[in-house]
Image 1 (cartoon, rainbow, N blue to C red):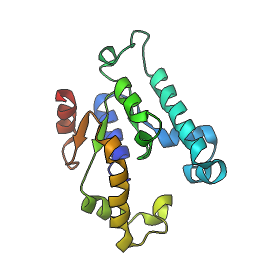
Image 2: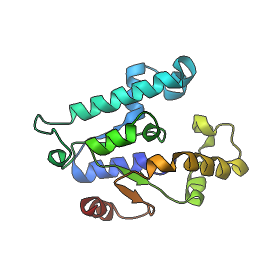
Image 3: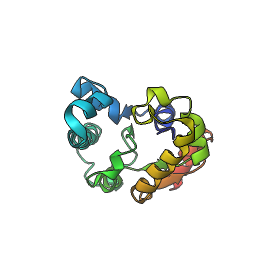
Length: 173
């Protein structure tokens, strides 16, 4: 949350000509409700199942018949931003690594706090978190998820770079 997944996804899509797909937005369309409503009305287990189904559907839509393995699937057919929890359930991170190229956008906790402190009201997980508790919440969430995120093909700690530089980093990873 706040790492820049959607921002970077759009920029990379613009520069590569590949479609940008936000996994949560796809789920909202299928469910005909926003993500907080899915959690509230159908539960997290349903959401996580749907998340995997939609992830697999996106991959299937953006492959050509000869894309049977990772090497032949390059260059990628779409840029996909997942929610921060997606890599942490089922074997999603391993599956994403096997079917594409994964990037962990990993700015500092201080950068995340600065980005998110203005958006707490609009983010369901942050709506009840005050400014003082935000840093603790971010540190806890990262500690819980680092073992999954750390499997990414590329870990990008500096997210304030030109798009062309990011593309070079992906090409050489």
